[in-house]
Image (cartoon, rainbow, N blue to C red):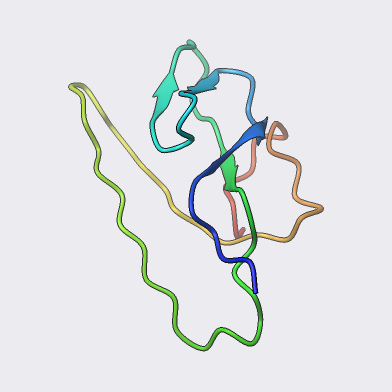
Length: 82
């Protein structure tokens, strides 16, 4: 069973850059938001899944974490899970 272990290097909004480890994401844009997916989805048979996110930086106004289907468009302006 593949579990999410890092951010997806290729499945992200335009203004995000991911380092080669796949663990650090930098926002480098002027848009109001960006989104990124994990490298694997949480499997339905996984009844409990734990993850942590550290927010490093100044001036962060709003951070939204959501779960979404693979068909969710990361550049359409809606929040994940909406």
